[in-house]
Image (cartoon, rainbow, N blue to C red; front, side, top):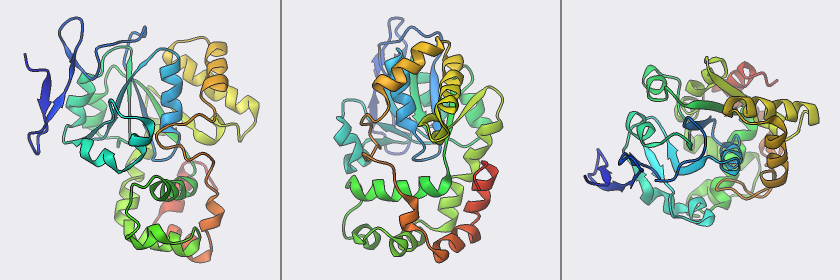
Length: 281
């Protein structure tokens, strides 16, 4: 039996591992947990921070980033390689209905997925955690990451600009209203989806104080079925401040990018209304 599947667009092979029962999987190893898990998230909302916690409590990281119709295969890459432009060579046209079936019990994956009937059906049986964040902070954190990681060539005008409102305007113009809105709005309904545990980034990193952070960790622990104290100890000792593929070493100061023009554009594009739906003023 071939240990690969083909990219439905190009025919390239995505190599797979064979589990103990011969089933094709992202990886052969499995953790002690009875179900697979997925971190669904808004971009730059703590995806890999929560993924690191899952890995540290025994889930096996598939090292896949999934979307509705694509899969990015980060297996075998260093953290620095995952951060850089090399990832574009590892994108496969594999839909979530296929990729989800290649993640075994005791493994996890991550991705930015919309709430659709197809995605819901594909993720039946997964423990689902949804990370969200103030959208203004997330948007400009992503801008900074795309610049600092080297994923974008310096020849792109907004990449070579100094951080500030002018760079923000140039970046937003390059992304475009429809692409930005469509990359965010379809994900927000995970906050009210049955069986999904919503986690606010700000609470998890302690912005709301120790008790709010501990409540977040307790929800995560409850979702994956582990003792709260063990989850809290692991998070504080081996997750906070650690390098991940998209962590830039410090929090992005969104205020650097804001002025009246930027705020007016975000309001006009409906981004601030989405933010209010999430509970951010």
